[in-house]
Length: 212
View 1 (cartoon, rainbow, N blue to C red):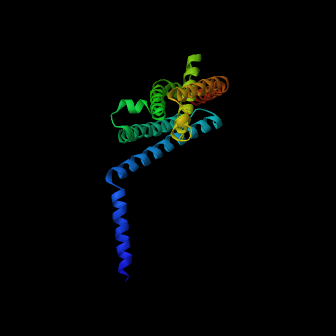
View 2 (tube, rainbow, N blue to C red):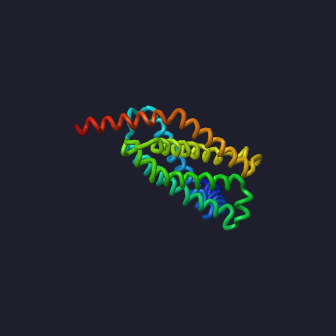
View 3 (cartoon, rainbow, N blue to C red):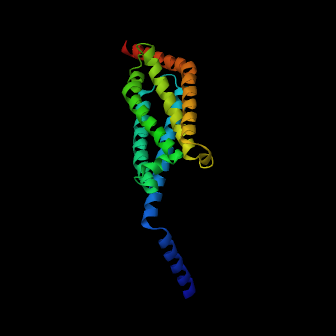
């Protein structure tokens, strides 16, 4: 056995240990969990959108399962995200404000959280009972769904906007977000609302047949 090989390996291990200090390992772990939880939430939202486009009626159980998955993923995103912010800027609010990308990301995730609460409190009960009482019952799930989809997609854009971020201010990020939200809401009201109405009516008809 060649002792020089072990000597070289030992030096390499010591060098890696010096570079990969405990803080770096923890930070990388939080980043990994943050990325995975975001991917899980985004895929769940998009999968539900596709399912809604192909469905013949509202599947309340599927909606509930998706909502639970997204809720857990969002909670992990907040925990890991705040930890990463702590690693990057600590408690320095001025440093946070000076980073337009980070500030925009926090704003978008805050909208996602508020919108998620509204979905649970307003939209899901409407979709689950499959009996729209008036136009407001059709308006709420469609608008909140549009906000959810656009917000998750825009959060992913902000997350990977390393090349564009130096060219954009916080106002630019939020203005673009606002334009996308407005466009998505209009699109949803014009094209998605009639389909949601048909799905709800189809589900109501099934309930009526089953009760006879």
